[in-house]
Image 1 (spheres, rainbow, N blue to C red):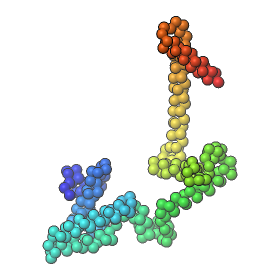
Image 2 (cartoon, rainbow, N blue to C red; image 1 turned 90 degrees about the vertical axis):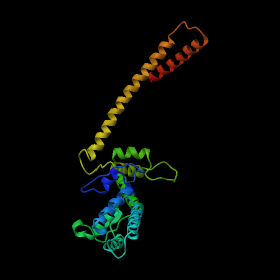
Image 3 (tube, rainbow, N blue to C red; image 1 turned 135 degrees about the horizontal axis):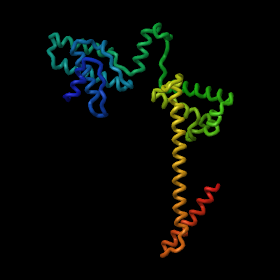
Image 4 (cartoon, helix red, strand yellow; image 1 turned 180 degrees about the vertical axis):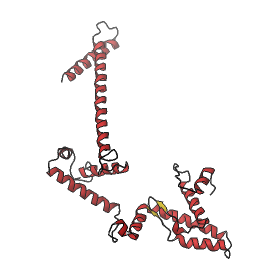
Length: 265
């Protein structure tokens, strides 16, 4: 793969480097080039950590690393030191730390359970298991809050059902809470904290939205008043020429009467 100047800088980095690029610009190819450059410099595969977001991406990346090394081996004399080096690299890639975030963190904790303060026989839940446990905790908490008479929870419970009665029914209470938690987690909000990165952030945002709502309502009412005044002015015209003009005045009078009744209500 031919690298452009900026990709070459990313491949040959000598210190902590962040590479930010949009889709389709060759990020994976650049990462493979950076990995191969470390291997060429003599760093064993077991000392190079490559982290991806999914296991599928990790498997694809490991395969690309292998193919690059195989190309090196095929173009290098087999009896030389360089050929021996790349064959040793190929063997090491099989067990190199190339994985998604969760498996790597799980391996790291299993290797250091005392330092992490966890049971060394722990297991990592998959998405279905963690989702079921999360929903069960949410459900227990909602039930407890309803029994304690929490006004906010009871108000939400009046609008949303606790559980989804049918597959195509509206979203239930626990699903809404779970979606809200995922949204807050994605924003980096820790609800266990009482500062601008925790509960205060959510409360400040809610207060700002309430203030904006009051402002929008006032602007809407002003606009409605201006429209009503305009219809009132048209309805007050006495001498109008032409059938279209007369129909417009008649319609304006009807609208003005209806809007005045609405405002009085």
